[in-house]
Image (cartoon, rainbow, N blue to C red; front, side, top):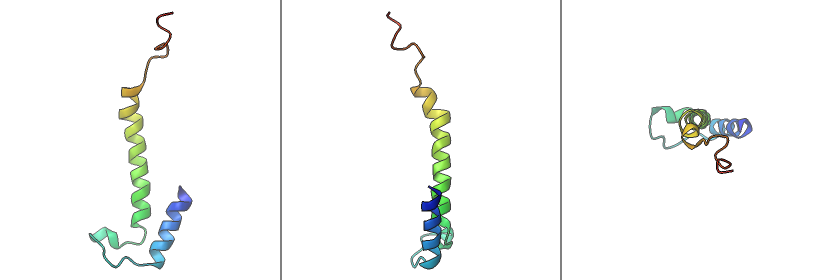
Length: 65
């Protein structure tokens, strides 16, 4: 993951963005930082919110026996 984000930063530095949509989009490391922050936020959301919803008790499938 870090190698891909580093490659995005290098490509962003070599090839400037000619049509930025908003102010931060002009930074050459924006998409690498955006990808990293998105991955961290998704990990936290999945761990703290989604996992407790989907978690089953340890004996969920063996209760009848």
